Length: 150
Image (cartoon, helix red, strand yellow):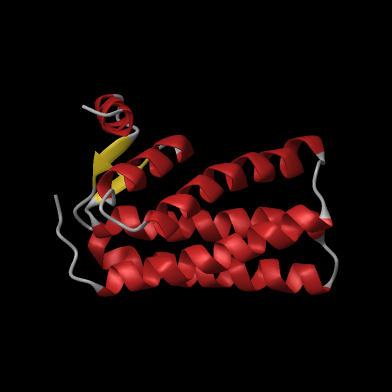
């Protein structure tokens, strides 16, 4: 059993990931929220609101990741477990997807730094918005394929 698989099992046993039968019906709503957050992040860049763009780009990625989890019939109760779950459940996806999951982890740290330490930058905000755009684009392609619910 690999590290991600063990971490996923731990998230399940602690109730931080739970079965969610209504999840597949809510995928579209999560993607719509992700799109809205991304639009706000992009607008923040044009207005030089680096902190806001950082935060909104993270939440775009969060809702994009949540759409993936919902599509498989699960729900998260912990942000860390969301990343672990999509890594585990979508292990067969290409390397671009897995690089974006790493970006999602970095985005969480950047959002926390922006929120709690007032630590953010123009460069960081631009990179995060680009990552959020790529993540949403790749996830839309993944979700167009038939989803096998575990």
